[in-house]
Length: 332
Image (cartoon, rainbow, N blue to C red; front, side, top):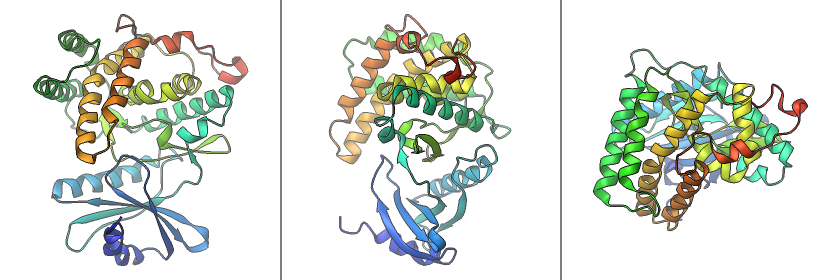
């Protein structure tokens, strides 16, 4: 595509001031509008360069906060990318960060080559590492999660109503009522770091084991249960053994009912977020089919929860994990 290297060439001198590089390769995968490059450095060292357009100072500030958060997050997990450099272009239109690069396959690709037991083991590893990430507390002075989430979901419900989007088999009034009834259940939750996009495509697998966690650009702070939403909407469709393993690895056994109640609530609330995002992405990117994929995901989640008459999804209830020697502390 003409001009696809323009941003890299603009920043290359600044990156070269901090790292000795021999080659750069464009990475085209993912839904992000950021540009990504694999950089080859000295002695076989490889780096990931992420470039972000910064038309406003707010975006530049957010990216700097992301970089600084990653610096601190490395104290909680060895599978978080190491940080090497952050900077902005001389005209302020771009910012960049240089991180360590994880060799391996993304988890979405890797799962297809693993046995069910291996998928489960990988999920257990993913759950343990997610718990490590959640050990990082939110900065002091943040708005309480219940108030922040209420404001966010209220805005999305208004947009959902204004767009007139229809979802087959879902009564908008019933969905709104379900969400409103669930809001009191997230009062006084502790707030931690949230990856906010934790699913196999953002996990790097090498030799069947978890080797790295990537794509932190959607990170947030809030209720740690909210970080399981991508399990419901993405991971579960790829691999039920992996998803069950993630739950068991996180809790060291079966999921407590308190978790299931909050998880079910967030699954319902995410119906609105998912369909709004898919319409926005399809219109913005010109990529057809995202709305249809969203509708398919939503039908799956609604079915898993039996039209939200149960807070424990069917796939989790019915899955029989490997024996005790495989699952460690049991499954509940």
